[in-house]
Amino acid sequence: MVFQITLTRICHLAAVTMSAFILTVFSAYADDIVFVANKNVCVDSLTKDEVRKIFLGKISMWPDNSPIRFVIVQQVDTHKRFVEKYANKTEEQFWAWWKRKLFTGSGTVPIRFVSEADVLIYVANTPGGIGYISSNVKIGDNVKVLHVSDNEGKGTK
Image (cartoon, rainbow, N blue to C red; front, side, top):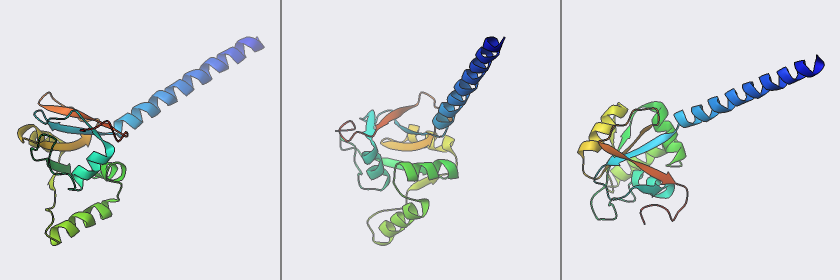
């Protein structure tokens, strides 16, 4: 009897632990950022550093010398995760960066879209287009998803 109760508790504990693990993995994935590009963009992957440089205006051309046309989403949670994880800045620092570039004549403020659906439409219809959306947004086959790696040597080079 004691053995059966202990075994039942162990099985219940394992089931609860597995459920928590699955929920944690799902939640982490649901909060992730996905980079989408126009289907004609010449790369399939970027490094995290290349993403940062693109969205800070430090890289303006794809490897085939076509212009990069990046856009950002105004959706607060998605944009906040993006600037923290990929631009290595706070939202305030990100906008201060772009205001400085604007006022020094070295750049223009990025195009912003209210919805992630608008980002997808822009990217699909703009040669050289790239943007980011939340991973829980449905992506059609009219854009390509770019793989982003932490490894410096695994991107567009």
